[in-house]
Image 1 (tube, helix red, strand yellow):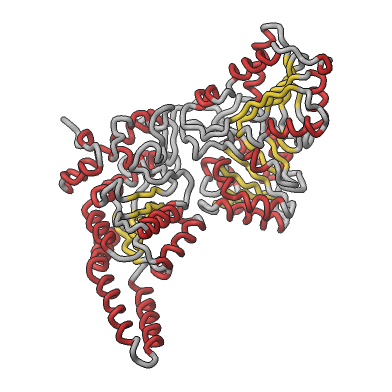
Image 2 (cartoon, one colour):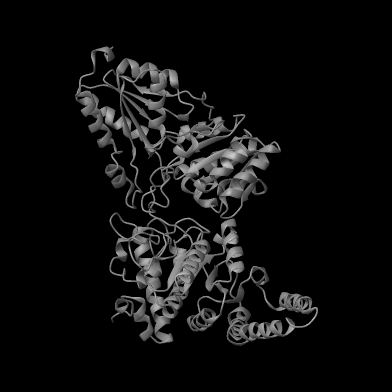
Amino acid sequence: MPRLLDGINSPQDLRALTTEQLVELAAEIRRELIDTVSRTGGHLAPNLGVVELTLALHRTLDSPTDRIIWDVGHQCYVHKLLTGRREAFGTLRQHGGISGFPSPEESPHDPFGTGHGSTSISAALGLAKARDLRGGTEKVVAVIGDGALTGGMAFEALNQAGAMGVNLLVVLNDNEMSIARNVGAMSAYLAGLRASLVEPLVRRARADVAALLEHIPLGAQMLDFMDRTRDAVKQFVVPGMLFEELGFTYLGPIDGHNVETLLGILEQALDLEGPVIVHVLTRKGMGYQQAEDSPRRFHGTPPFDIETGEPASSGQPTYSEVFGTTLARFARRDSRIVGVTAAMLDGTGMEFLRRALPARCFDVGMAEQHAVTFAAGLAAAGLRPVVAIYSTFAQRAYDQILHDVCLQNLPVVLVLDRAGLVGDDGPTHHGAYDITYLRHIPNLTLMAPKDEAELCRMLATALELPGPSAIRFPRGVGPGTPPPEVPEPLAVGRAEVLTEGGDILILALGASVQRALMAAERLREEGQYATVVNARFAKPLDADLICRLAERIGRVVTAEENALDGGFGSAVVELLADRGLPQVRVKRLGLPNRFIPHGETETLLRECGLDSDSIYEVCKAMTAQPLPVASRP
């Protein structure tokens, strides 16, 4: 039997469907989501939760003329299925396939790229104001989840939008509240009544009264009294009074899985003047029991078995898990240790501390700036806070790291998960810049482990430092080195020589160390010998060791999974120049100055010249070139 979904090639095709067919289409979309994400991995639970909402938006709006901005963007899979990308949907998050996030380069139905949280209202407000300035009439809608609403930027945008009074619709996708019968029925009825009758009538009445009072003594004071009385009454009957105070008309909460209700409320909301918020209640993982039962686990999932919901896994602990278990062990022994994360308890491994010592683990929501300054306050009061944030999200807290932590030399430990290439999540999530934006900040110690055991030792080191530090490590599993029973701190700023040879020096940092060793082994098989150094520290560098070896060997290759510009390799070149060793030949390997697309990590490493074969080829080419006589040992 043919599917309704196979006949949807653009949002306009939805207009020919009845409400009953839209409900049937929603079921088909859920099956498509589960089947595809079980093979590709991705953000399943958020997308299952917005199926009816996405259908209603595209049935009501005229995309791409009208604009939809998806906050964070990981819930855009249904949107992509409805906007001409159905046939390519099987390539989701695959190299050369469609992105797991909105991408303006991919489709005109994606008017703004998103991947980080709390940005949608700001972007939508900009689009709406630009529309007004050029005399346009298109609708602009921001869809933001209750999680993203914890970010301060969202409230900054709400404040300005309310003050400007522009026509803008914000859909609050709330998947934390339950959908009770009274919410799904009576609340929807009241919201519809208010949108179609009450709010327009109140606005017209106020305008008429204001015009009348303008010509009588004390008219302004009387109008102010009337407004305050109206607001006092609203406190009792309007649940979204916060939004009303910010200048929005609030409608809801309504059942986000009732297509008929959604269509009615959205159509009425879009007819209202000024900024409007529609509060929609949805259920993460809706329609797939395993995801409904474990929405956090299925928020972002690797490929999994549909019947059991179990992921395909090697069984080896990830770097995140090694960090989390080690932190919990340290915290049990030291009452000063506390953990902080920004809506990433599971992803960063901080969940282990929460389970062991819940009173000393803080999830501050999608608010990285607050997380870092909150940790600075904890440190100023004598505690040892460990802040676990994905590398790409830590960019949002740069000023707080510099001003609130490092300037005061506070002992805050930044743990930067997902450093380097993260594969199928793509350019918004690659942790490509943390070495660059951190290594120049005074007082900060910056480390990257070569394996799981070294990660544990670096955490022990960081917790003993008198000032701030950062540890970066990649996504997924490491080489499998068992963590030590009692991790010993490292000597700060001391590198580790792993192999010795006089033909070339490879200075590698973090995940690049294992690939450098593989390249060195291939060189050895061909009669060429490399000194491979595990740098351990991007700051401070082991300056004496690096300069001594570089001067003796004459050829240096640096390898890092970070942007080349301003990264570890740049630090080495600066060091050699400052020490008066410009004759040393240096080749830096790292991420090029462009945004790296999504795809399998090994494929991306190869394209960026960072896999073991690429390191080997560069070393082989360098050793084939004779050194100047002055540089020979």
